[in-house]
Amino acid sequence: MAYAPYTNDRRTEDQGRVLGCFTECDHGHRFEYAERTDALFPADFHPDMPHVVFVGERDVRLASIKRGVLTLINGDEKVEKWMIKQHRVYEQ
Image 1: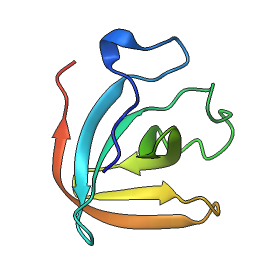
Image 2: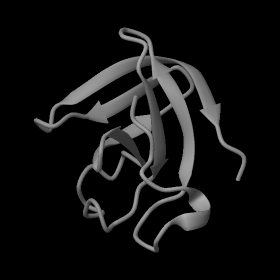
Image 3: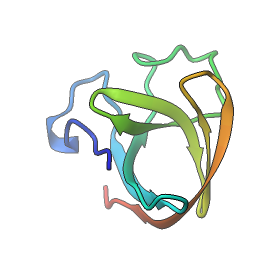
Image 4: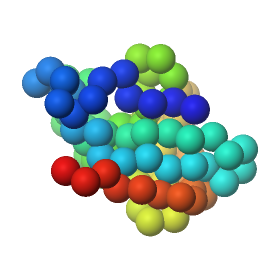
């Protein structure tokens, strides 16, 4: 399980809003995700990935999250697709 290290009411300007959470289908691990900011990744690096997924303590991956699937850039900069369930979008 990987949760954001901050909350929306206590974030800095370089931290994106936490948007929601999901469970990946293969192993049942739960993750939170946030909007992407230029502080973490340059805007021209995979501009089609509007989210960051928290995968560990202070560790994030770029992703594009849809209803039941996400596309993620892993640590080796390879594209992976994960099936997800229990996708919950937080109230803003």
